[in-house]
Image 1: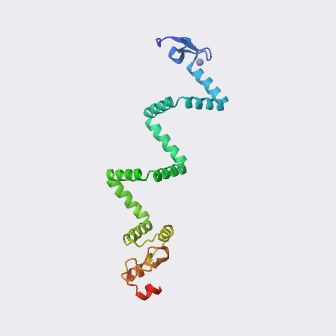
Image 2: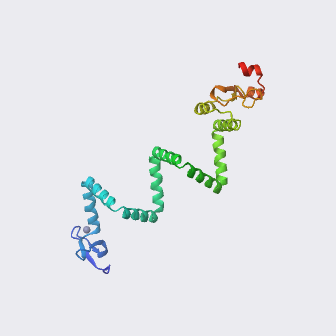
Length: 224
Ligand SMILES: [Zn+2]
């Protein structure tokens, strides 16, 4: 590099500028007569007038130099971590549907890895996880009820293969306020075990369900 104290007059804008403000042409071993600013302006005008061409050219170069592209992106990310993060977040916000679908597809294709990841995160963030679970439970009481009924039914082996799990979930989620979901035939009756199936579910006013317990008469169970 030559000393930066040297100056040159740009043949475009006519301004006197230090040599560092001019691009050095390796092929001719000398500085361009036009300053960087004027060159950039010219390039911008050209790009604007030849958008498609420039885009195709850029794509062709990227396709031909995948490793350079990767290295360049990596260097940029490392030099601009904040901007990279912000860009990523902005893109996600603008493509929420796609992000959600991609995440779901990934989880379904990598079930075990996803579960392991979740487990590791919960282990490392016990307090956060506890708080999040508490908030979720508070906001989703019906789902909690549906899940615990599901678990209880599974324990009692009361969910047959033909049960419509989606329908059951719906019944739980649509439970009107002040009502409980009741198994018409109780799951753990000593006389006749009820099933965790949609046709064995009914809404009962909360009090009635509590007083009912599992004391359904044999007659009720057979003819109910
Ligand atoms: Zn100039």
